[in-house]
Length: 140
Image (tube, rainbow, N blue to C red; front, side, top):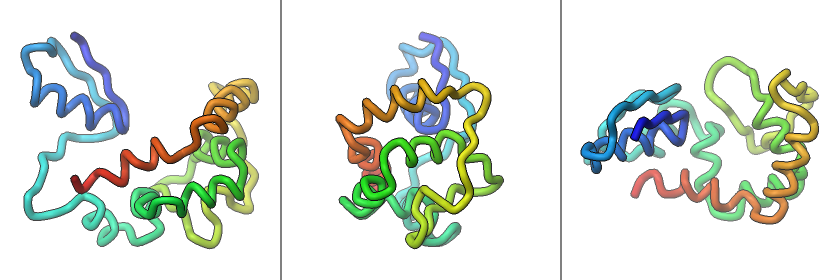
């Protein structure tokens, strides 16, 4: 197969190539460079040491905490903020503000209100626990 990975998909794509090189003809990854597993360092602790507790991957670690924040902010507001986030630097989710800040989110040209409503309807059924669990298992 030809594989293209971005962000989470890039990490999974790297591992696909490592575990099944016989199945991959070519790989293109965006935004995440290959990082081999370390027996010395755990990913979440390394990110916490480098970025601090408000770094989004660190905030996602406690089961139920971010789910409650997302519920109180509203699914649509959270998705709009995530998908329209354009602040340079690492994604921070301060405990006192969560995903929704004082600044209104402006949708980029490639994202419509209809898109947001579609994804909102899906996440209102499934919730955010599944995506958060990806991050909760990074040290495994």
